[in-house]
Image (cartoon, rainbow, N blue to C red):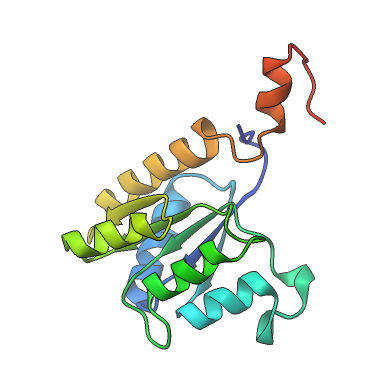
Length: 162
């Protein structure tokens, strides 16, 4: 479990600037323990994750705890980017949740076939997006063990985190 005082990093891959503003506002309403970073196509997403191109300065690119991925992006769509993330041994452990306007069954199935951790149809109102963000925060940063070591120590009866 990630502690509330820890800054969590969410990487958002979405080319629609209005949707980026909506997501940013929703995360802002849900607290300040999230570091949001935005990229606007699948190529930028992979460059960020691999510290390439404009993201070559690795001190400026923090490994995300969660990726929110739109499917409909230019240059490399969400499914292509997801396939590359999950094929990379260094990146595949990062959970990727698709956040898109699509409700097509083929998109849902393909997301899970490629290793996506979730599929959410993108809400259009701020109130609905805030609810989605609350659930994402609760699930990914309070329920799921992303680091693992704290959970292992609890199981072994240890009261410390290494």
